[in-house]
Length: 298
Image (cartoon, rainbow, N blue to C red; front, side, top):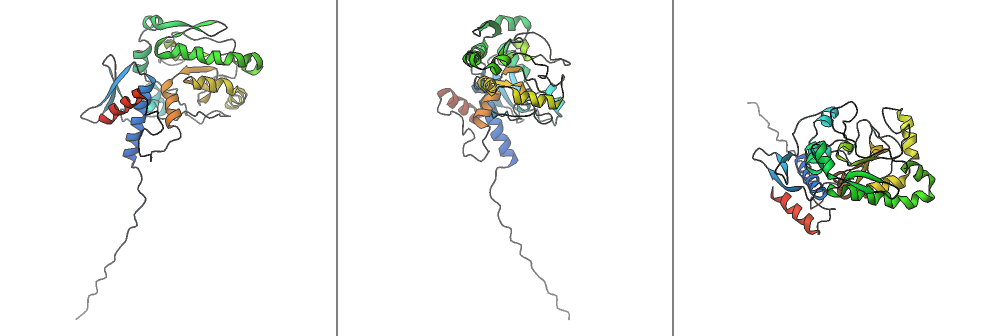
C-alpha cells in the first residue's frame, strides 16, 4: 500500500501598518473641502446634506443645492467646462514661491463652480452691477463686488502694497497702471463667464509675457521669476489666487477666491492620518465649530 503524505503549508501573513483607505481619504478631503467653502462664504452657505444615494450637496441660503462630486471620470477640459466642487478644490494651490510655469494642466483656482459664484456675486449682469462698489485703492477707485468682503479685501491688498511701491520700482512697475477689474464678458474662446464678470478679479500692469496664449513657456518662466513676491504674497494673504500659478498662466491676474486660499492655508501641508479630519483649521472659532458639527452630522 502506498503511503499518502499530506503536507500542510502554513502561511503566516505579517500585518501591514494600518493606513487610511482610499475611501476614508476621500471622506476626509470632502469634509475639508466643504469646511473651507463654509468658511469662505459664511453668509451664503447654510448647510450640507447627504442624500439617500450618497450624493453630498452644500445648501445655499436661497435653498439651492450644489453637488460636491458628480463621480464622473473627466478629462481636464471636461473638468474645466463642467466643474463640480471636488474638481474645483482638487489641485492644491501652493502658497510658496514658484520660479517657473506650472506643469501641464496644473491650474489650482482656475476651475470655478458657477452656481456658487452666481449665488454670491450675482447671476446676471444687472445683479452683479447692483453689488458693485467703488473700491478705494489709494491712487484711484475701481469697481469691485462688495459681497463677501471682496472689495474690502482688494482695498486691503493694494493699500498694503502702496508704501512698498513708493520705494520699490519693481513693485511699482507691476502694480501700476491697473488693466481693469469689472468687465462682463466670457473667457476668451469659451462660453464660460470670466471672473471679471462677477467683479472679483483685477488685472494689474500688463506685460507682453503675461499670458499663456501670447508667449512661449520659457518667456513665461522668465516673467514669473521677475514678478515681485511682495505683490503675490500680499494678494494671497487677502484671499486672492494668482494666475501666475497656473500652467495656463495669466500673470497679471489676481482673483478673489477665499475657498482656494483657505484650503491651502489650513490643509495644504496636512496628510490624512490626523486623528481629527479638521486638524489645522481654527476649530475653536465659534462659527467654524458650528460648521464642523454640521459636516459631522451629514
